[in-house]
Image (cartoon, rainbow, N blue to C red; front, side):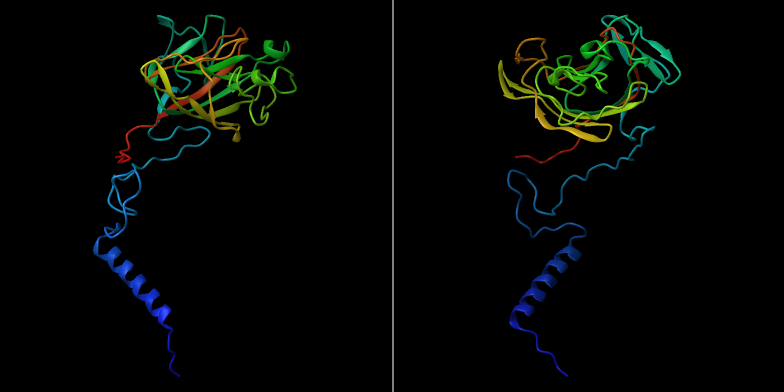
Length: 264
């Protein structure tokens, strides 16, 4: 029995053959595809290849991460112009009233991971219970707080953009348990003294999405509306000493640089 394909099928097969031939002729990329809008590259065309990164897990940082704290020392941190003075014990560091600490390195756009544990037995309530904070560029705070069965103002609870945006949900674990924060921070951009693009974050708290591309209204402030003031493209990470003995461990950063996007 002879099968006769309709003309449309022949056209489809011919186009598929052409595409496959182009694929074969040029290895794994195409040179007969249109240019992507706003880029210097074609669809599926030759362009810089993303570098290979070995994923981490709860205990290990990715292969390209900058390890800011692995439990062995506080060499990546300082308190003002002095060495960081927090307690070092086991695989964690603990707030001890010697003041906030900041990274010696400065960062712009980044991915950061850290783990924290609020103190036990629980003491106090609202902002007086397990209070700390992660500051980006020393200005933009992601609140750390014991918000497990602890009422406070919503834009001050755990993982709030302090004084600006509450988290989508409360994903807190009980005090004493180790919680994780995974944050993508995009630094603000300025045109002279004028704000061009605000800072924004995407945050996972214990693996739960609590902010997605949420914009900071400005530098963190208490009891007042946040405002922007122009600053440099890079800044320090800061962990706040708010008088509560929280513990921190496994802190690493990946800088979002190094890939040529080919923008025109």
